[in-house]
Length: 79
Image (cartoon, rainbow, N blue to C red; front, side):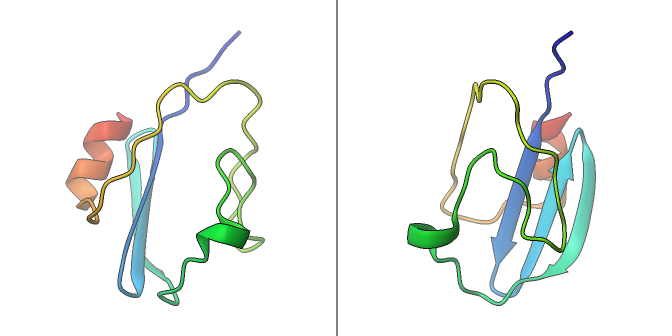
């Protein structure tokens, strides 16, 4: 059986939010640095502190916004 997972992540300044299946977690701290060259992965497990299960399958849609989405927007796109 195939299960569709909808996951979204937003960060702005030093705070971040995640949403998985419509459940939003806010207030995460972020050091403000995102080194996309060496540490950004799509479909990988988390950073050791907060792990998501690895993706076994295809990524159908990937979207990147140039601004942080609100908690309500994260919830809407992952529900």
